[in-house]
Image 1 (cartoon, rainbow, N blue to C red):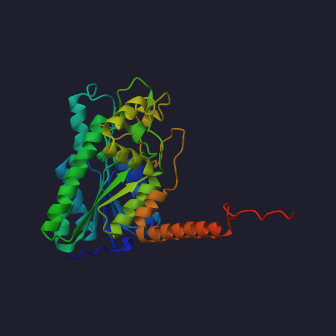
Image 2: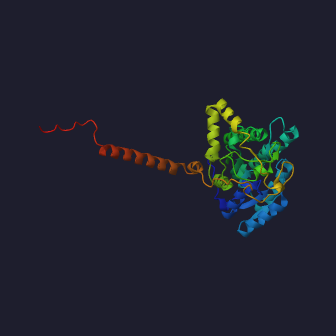
Image 3: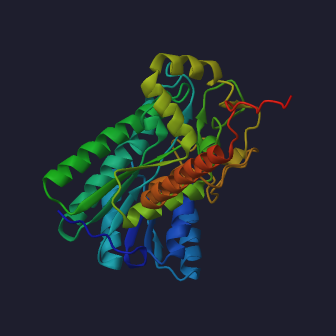
Length: 350
């Protein structure tokens, strides 16, 4: 089965969670590359501002406010997309909320609300997108996490939701492939990303604020990965080696990783800086949006060699071969010049 994905400037893309963080960075990148966009989040005012921003760049964009936890509201988004643009080419399920606290501290109602957004939002969007894409073909992109592989203490509900997203995405991919549906499915797995995620989170910790365990990466790196996935078939793309290393360590030595994470889990996620109070706690309703990055100190990494290696595997492989060849050549030439240590000194004349 051949899946043909259009260039971004010929695509109509629906993106959820568009008004903040990764979604905002991705929206701006896709608009700059000429995509037509249907922007989804709960924050109508911010979506409308963002749609105007995209239009000023020359992109076609409309605001479609919706709560992804409602299947009916996302169905309405799809209808608006088709009525306005005539089709859907790519659907990006990116909306997410967070809770910091122990599994016992978090009320069951909050567990369920988080799953409404993080898991059911992905399920709703994927099923709706698959229905529209079966005939014409296209792309479904789901934002998971490195926590899809390895849970983080004090983020139990979030970790569980991302495990669920991975399981659903993998099953959906296989089922679409078995049915020979011309739909490509990619899971994006970011490491810790410097977005308002921490400020938007509901917090049950004793600290005034929450933060990401380091290292933290710039949201535009995730946007780059998502934009790449719009045009290429990839099963998964991991953004940032920091989180990938922890996941790999967890697979190789799970109990040791447990102990290490227990040792640093609290001190790396608590902070006395609450960030912007206007952003705090968007679990049940939208709060202040419009920022790609958090207001917390510390900054983020703007580059990721690990990401580039995934996006350009052939170039990376050639570069590694070249480096290896250079090292071998250097070692060989060095050995040719090295004086022999076992050569006897000539005898002195007597």
